Image (cartoon, rainbow, N blue to C red; front, side, top):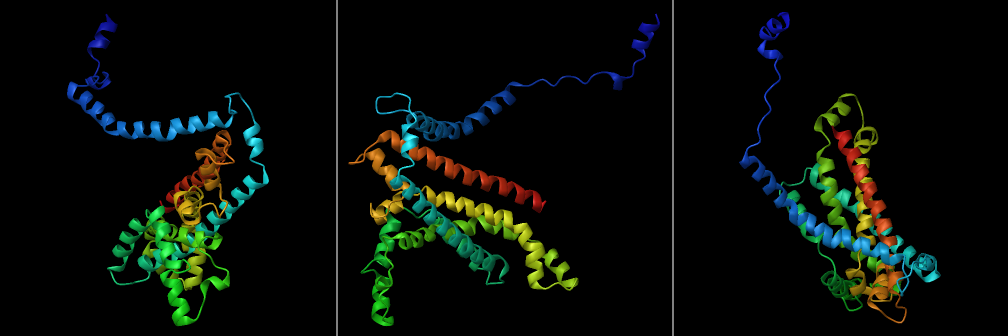
Length: 308
């Protein structure tokens, strides 16, 4: 009797809330949302996941399809190690050069109090130039810095400087590095500009009010905030140049032994044709670029937490 009276006297707040019913239109909208991102997953599956899996399987097989570690043992041949080392040097040089020059350009546009039209113009150019690579870029630099290129001829005619007598060659390590800088610098500008925008004006004003100098502001305030973004962007530039093949092949052909050209030769076939060794080379490149991109993602998340 008391139990029934307690149940009858229970307040409405004590009752569980009604379970919301999912209507038909809501379900259809959820399916439409997933349908909208389906092309991305299909693209990633066909052009990223499946090719990577194919490379991994092929790297552990010989020409007859048998399991082997010989392909990875061949990676330690002097020619292969030399190709990786040259690729590492070109990527490091272009990444460091692009990071320094791109950061200075971005700082001048964001913090340099330049005319208002400079920043949108620079960002527009950077968006175009960062994607300008391959055969058109190689042809442009041959016409500019080749033996009879425009800049080479002008320097020899009006300055009396024979650029090629100094040891420079557009087909060499220095020439390829300079060519890579064309798209590395704009990419750095695009990446580091948001980080520079995150520097609040109040921080500089507080430093000035406390008697701090410009050096102290950059040493103790700005650089600790910016360094994860700058270092992460440098790693991204390294991965970007390490995996470039079209520009290097169109510019230097086989005169410069870098790993992407060696990989191209193994896959496409020449006197050194070994397709499975090419798969192992590609897997090594995936490891290097993956570590670089992973470092960039970790540093970017650290920079975002620091700006909060």
